[in-house]
Amino acid sequence: MVAELLAEEKDTIELAGKIARDARAAARLVAKAGAAQRERALRLVATRVREGARRILDANGADLEAARRGGTAPAMLDRLALDERRLEAAARALEEVAALPDPIGTVERIVRRPNGLRVGRMRIPLGAILIIYEARPHVTTDAFALCLRAGNAVVLRGGSEAQHTNRALGEAIAAGLDGAGLPAAAAQVVPTTDRALLEALLQHDAELDLVIPRGGEGLIRFVAERSRIPVIKHYKGVCHVYVDAAADEDMALAICDNAKTSRPAVCNAAETILVHQAIAPTFVPRLEARLRERGVTVRTDEAAFGVEFLDLVVALRVVPSIDAAIAHIERHGSDHTEAIVTRDLTAARRFVDEVNSSTVVVNASTRFADGGELGLGAEIGISTTRLHAYGPMGAEELTTTKFVVHGDGQIRT
Image (cartoon, rainbow, N blue to C red; front, side, top):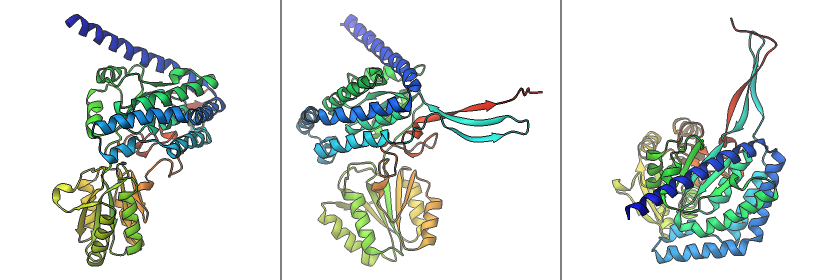
């Protein structure tokens, strides 16, 4: 038994090493590929997704059936589910990313120093990126698209609940890469959801440049505690809507409804609604009635605040002022997305200036905190880490810059 366990551990370590080395080698080739070749690959993958729709949806059906048997909550099933409309949206997102301006090779902030040196910063790929995610199969195509557009290779490690769907999508990606003359290792779907393999991958800081975990709090802590690779956390979304004293009540009702009920299991759904006491006597009864019609449970107890429900549950608090609303967000928020509904420009400016979450919205739903909605084509996720990238991450956020210095014989004395 001991010998078998040791052999299994050795196989896991060897597989992790191969995946990491292949990603590093592919990253060099992808970085050298021109923008046109990378764009062609993305468009070919979109075509393969459409052509393989029946096979992908059948795979998703198998994942959904297993999840239902396992007692997965309806809101989480919604995260997992694909249909023709969602699959077509994934294909369109690939094409939208393909149409984005190439972020690689541009030189920014060129300045001339007093000694005549011209100094600029050239945008370059990050390299090889490990993406770890749960449930949402569309992350497979979105993450691939953005990494490739930015000249990176990607290792895609999805969760067990979407394993059949992710493999089917991985086959479409591999076919598109091959058609464009790019290496299959530019987008590797990890063949197992074994956590031992994930732990082994997280040790390969010499080959992998960045790891991005997307999922529940447990997954993100697991990665952050074990990784030798730099981590950008896409942490939980405890998003707030603050209905100010100067809010249009009808607008506020529509925004609160949409922010909570349009897709309650996503990270940009509102989890807490704050209402100014001046408007509360008329607004709160209307709000509670509207939400209950939608099947939402409204909670007002202290334990409800700071919780990411990911379900048809919302916390509600009446606050005495905008100062109290901002203080509540500071205490209970997760740096994801906050919205204010108001006709008072001074209140809106204060909220924007003083709330430092990654996305701040005025008179619109928190659900717009999304890369596609904000013009990024798609997103790798929403970073709540205030280093390198903050908020929805598109292709440009998957690059870095290097200094480029042009001289004419200058020497330092």
